[in-house]
Image (tube, rainbow, N blue to C red; front, side, top):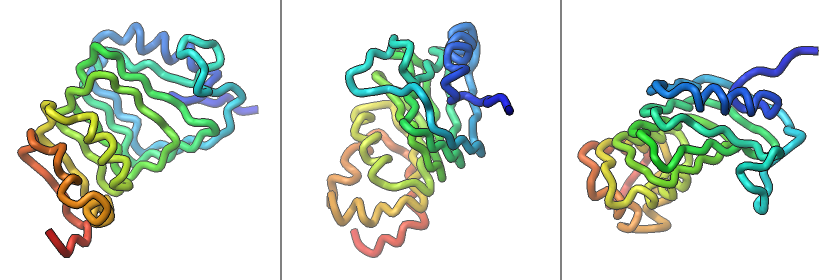
Length: 177
């Protein structure tokens, strides 16, 4: 009988949330290159309150500035929610080459750097819609199959990038503009 560990095991959810509540100075969380794959007994359902004892969520600390979940394989059944508080300091998010059933709730986004290399363009595009008129300065959509996004959305694909000063769209097989 092995003990399950990691950020996303429901058995440790209360301990993790307590840790993050007390981690008032935590600025950088690197959860990259992790693999988590399991079925959860208790889960979030659409009509469930976040305060429910059965919910599968992790509240991140308000002090967190950088979150790296790149190269993470997180396939939980059902999905886990990462909750970024409304009053947050998150300015850097890297989800590159991740394959997850993880959902994030970020009510107030003030990212300066968003890296989504090697992920599906549609996830990044939907996140970018939340970032309109923001402080976003750097974005990486390398190898994100954005040619399909351009084909689907046309010039609207880039409409949420008005504040961006650095854009990496390399390795995307874009043959038209």
